[in-house]
Structures are given as structure tokens and as C-alpha cells.
Image (cartoon, rainbow, N blue to C red):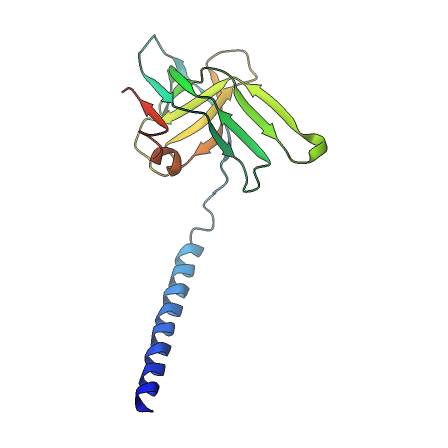
Length: 168
């Protein structure tokens, strides 16, 4: 009887420790409530166009990235060589070999598909959480105007070497 009582107390203490740990974790994470985990972006940037530099990214196959967990709004980055198009203070801009495929499946009657020129903006400084973003050409006429539209997180960085590679 004494043994089962000790086991019960030990079990209660373990559960109490787990409860305290869960409470502390939730309090710590509550401080992160203002972190935006939304992958969308809409930041206009002006870049300096490149001068025939050899830097490039190579995507071994197409990559699909979705805006939500239900895959109702997705974009596909085509496979191939993404050549350096230009840069700004934060990113190097690599032009996709063909327009990117955007699909919107919000409602069956509203399925849409658009092909938009753009590419991948790779951050110059190391940032594991946000190493790159997808960009498109701006609606404005100058070729130097780009719009960052989608954030590529650490999972994009994790794919380097087997799904995509850089030559610099």
C-alpha cells in the first residue's frame, strides 16, 4: 500500500512539473503574440539592375508554396536557373526562368490561374527564419521596381543543397 501511495505522489509531482512547464511556455509564447506568421508581403522595392554577374540559383524541380493550410491560394516557382537580375541593400533578386504560376482556389466557381514574371529575392545577410522572399514585377513601368509578395521561411533554407543550389 505504501508503495502505490509513493508512486501516486511521484506521478502527481511529475504532472505538476509538466503543468508548470506548460504554463511557463504559454506565458513566454504569449509575448510573441505580435509576431506576424502570415507569409504574405506587399513591399515595393527599387533595385539596382545587375551587370551580367554570374550568380544564380538553380531549382532542381518546381516548388509549390501555399498561403494557407487549405492550399486554396498557392504559387509555383518553376524549375531551372534563376539568374541574378539586380540587388538592393537587403536582397539579391534572381529572375525565374519563366513566369510563376499563381492559383486561387477560394471557391470552385472562382478558380483562377495567373502567370506572373518575377523570382526569388535572397537575403544578403544570414537569416535562418526569413532567408528569402518571392517577388514580382511592379505594375509601374520601370524594370527596377519589384514587389515582395511572399516570405520563404526556414524550410526554404533547409532545402538548399537538395532542392535548390546557389553557385556563389
